[in-house]
Image 1 (cartoon, rainbow over the protein chains, first blue to last red):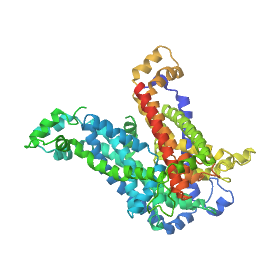
Image 2: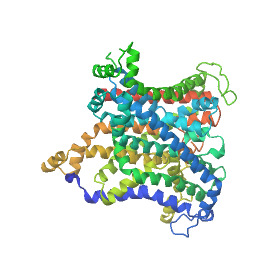
Image 3: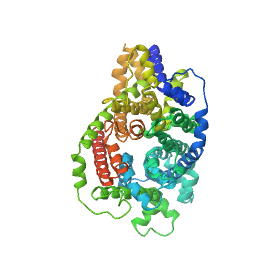
Image 4: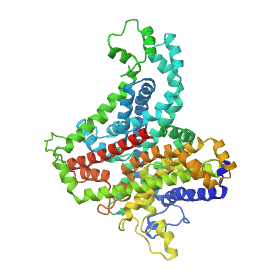
Length: 272
Length: 310
């Protein structure tokens, strides 16, 4: 391995620094959610205290369940729609040759680079005119945002499926749709799973479209609920942190099951 | 121009379809290109069409009163109005500072972390896992946590006071808010950079490092002379991704400072959002957004030129 660079002591000091930088915010996220507003008001932000679940009880009655369901609807809808549209597109862009690929890929990359703050303004008008300033509108907008990214992430997986497999099936008289469904798709399942995971994680916490398009408080997603805890008259930190913890739990579950996929898939997608 | 469908595929198609293809279009649609259609139509409706609406909005007079009605053309007046404001110039400068901090800390931190967790076994593997988990958390969540850590009576000041230091108003005083938010934004970007750099490190043939060692290079020499030059292409790609990421940053600014106090931490994209959704000057917001998009596309052009030159 990289024996010549094994700076054991330096490496471990570095790892401890990283552990502090990334561990401490998580520790305080959980700690602050278990305090009372009185603790925080007194300036008691230490880690030794009697935990209280008051904040969780309070946010439970303040739309937390509703917001969690809404976020799940958005994340689920966006994942299905995005991966469903991106899989065939990425397949086509891996198989086609010539200028159509260059033009399509350039357009996809340009779309992906457009800042979301620029797309949110006209989308407000467009979705509003269609009567879609709702969870449906957020799902449609998120899909438009993530589709280019998903296509770019999936294309390498289809490039790695050998073309000969398909040609053999074509000679045997299989239609293009059968070749795609029964031969190519199963070989690209790993890539689709990676893409679906990343899309789910991003759309679960998506904020800009949600805060701009959701007008009905019963449709608030969990990220909007968090932002709404930051009021004009100071912040109820324990409540804010309790919602933040609940927003992170599904991420932790998805993460636990897909960490290996994420680690490999992200590197592949960005290596384009 | 080469034909979009290769000769080989055409022969396969001929087997599938007894009738000869009538035109290039039908032949084209019977090939793989048809798989592009759903995504292309979707992007046309939800990205291209809104983008045209953005351009139209920037040269019209749109406020909260007529956003859902018809717009009247006013020319480039809104651009002139916006660019002449002090807010715009401040936002432009803020964006420059913000992007510079995020790219610098993000890249250097990512490279540092990638070297640390090069071999991800045991404790090192746990640290890498923790970082990737933090990356996966919603920015609104991590932004809220840092807002708490930076609060006047928050843990960071709680740590400083026993040493006789007075509390720092991280999100209020002078230019600190912009720097604090940029720090958090780069903190959140480091795990991604780590994964990308680490993948590039794992691609380096071990023989190369062994050879350096045999030649008597110290670890730091091997790092400077062997590893870093090999990471050049990765650094270029990642640098571009990071610049775009920093430029479009929204969630951290929104939750931590809302661009304030005043416009101290307002970047150009955030200014566009504020003009549209807080002041309801949709055309001014659109004009600012068009300038943002132009900057991003210009950066993309520079990047593509550079890649081609390599």
